[in-house]
Amino acid sequence: MVCWAPVRWGADAHCRLLGFSRIHWVYTEGVAMLSICARHTRGGIYLCNYLTAQRAGGPAPCHFSTSQPSLSKDHRDYSLPNVSWSQNLQDLYNKYQELSKNGNWKCIPSCSQWRLVKSQVGDPMEGVRENRFFIRNLDKDGVGLECCMFYNKAEKRMVCIFQPGPYLEGPPGFTHNGCTATIIDSTAGEVAVCTVGMAVTANLNIDYRNPILLGSTAIADSMVEKVDGRKVYTRCTVRSHDDKVVYAEATGLFIKSNL
Ligand SMILES: CCCCCCCC/C=C\CCCCCCCC(=O)SCCNC(=O)CCNC(=O)[C@H](O)C(C)(C)COP(=O)(O)OP(=O)(O)OC[C@H]1O[C@@H](n2cnc3c(N)ncnc32)[C@H](O)[C@@H]1OP(=O)(O)O
Image (cartoon, rainbow, N blue to C red):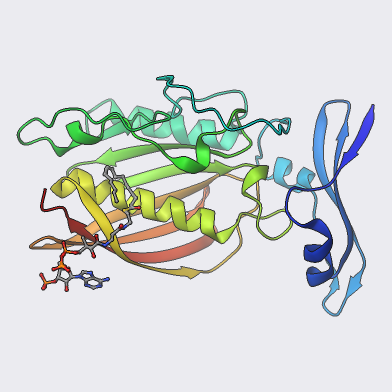
């Protein structure tokens, strides 16, 4: 069975802006692919489809839903692999799980709401054991952000391995830069919090180098460069799972809470 549906964002206006004649999602026998019917633009034919994402190690096909995102008080750990994870994401996850065995790295669980745990002296991690990551709290696996963070205390470093799903689309077929900013803010914020305790973002500067294909696997690698009083200076690089493409580079300033 084939059924056609418009993409979520204002397809018509966006199509005209980008020079597309028509954009649609196609579902064929359970295989979801974004097919963009392109027409000639000044720069030539711009054509991409979801199969490209699949070839790049994209997620398993997923369905769209019009229902509200889940607000249930579940305590599911969303950092655990699910069926929407690509092989590349699974491989990276396995790699960091392996590195975690000697205690250098630690996987950060992720739930659908804050559940602050009473701090223990000397371990700021205790306050952030489970946290909420808003671009992933959707009612279907794979449509938002699939991700998992790993923390290295000795290196003051946090990596976030992630796979952006179709709900996070900015330019056709690619991840919205706001989503990338959120991943950077959260990864750098998390390492700041793990280093000094509760902190908030005061400043974030991002250079976007390359677009991130939806469904591909990428890694945000963030570290604390300097702590000066309440100020925590961080740096973050987002690159492809194989380190071949740099997607974004950022610096962030986080301020330790007075509370
Ligand atoms: C909001 C609640 C969040 C709760 C989260 C708790 C759980 C955490 C657990 C897990 C984290 C996981 C990761 C999370 C990631 C998400 C991050 C976010 O989305 S955070 C929300 C967005 N950010 C804000 O809402 C900040 C709004 N701004 C403020 O509240 C204030 O401006 C603040 C706290 C940043 C600074 O205010 P002051 O009054 O406490 O301190 P002053 O004296 O102004 O600044 C301290 C020093 O920092 C410099 N500074 C401040 N802002 C600066 C800036 N933009 N650029 C450069 N320097 C700046 C100042 O010049 C000063 O430096 P000198 O000590 O004099 O050397």
